[in-house]
Length: 47
Image 1 (spheres, rainbow, N blue to C red):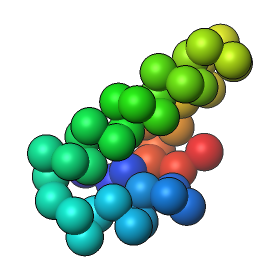
Image 2 (spheres, helix red, strand yellow; image 1 turned 180 degrees about the horizontal axis):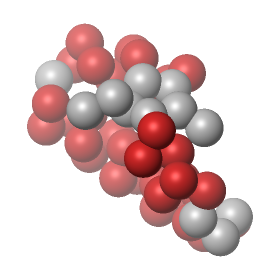
Image 3 (tube, rainbow, N blue to C red; image 1 turned 135 degrees about the vertical axis):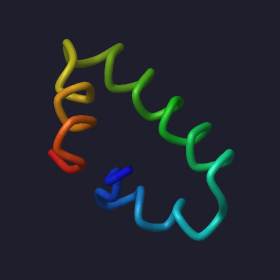
């Protein structure tokens, strides 16, 4: 699990469940505006 971008680093301290929730919300937002670079970011854990 290497999902530590800018905001993600902060979420790591909260916990796994909340981190997933935060990422889900972010991914949903990104999907709404930009096709799906969020999915690519999921693979290499960054951009």
